[in-house]
Image (cartoon, rainbow, N blue to C red):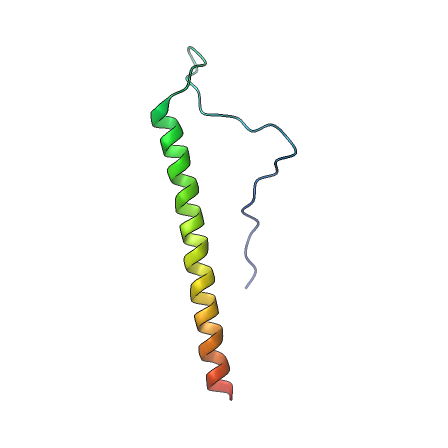
Length: 63
């Protein structure tokens, strides 16, 4: 199974969440962005755990 690249390209500046009218920081938008990152990391960790367990079971079955 190929896992897609989830690491951001940090060679270019990243946009930060900001209010369009003032350019100021919006804590709600920043939290939503951070929550999205946390969700993606948790999903990847769960997928990696499942794959490792599946491979372990498959090895036992084949032997």
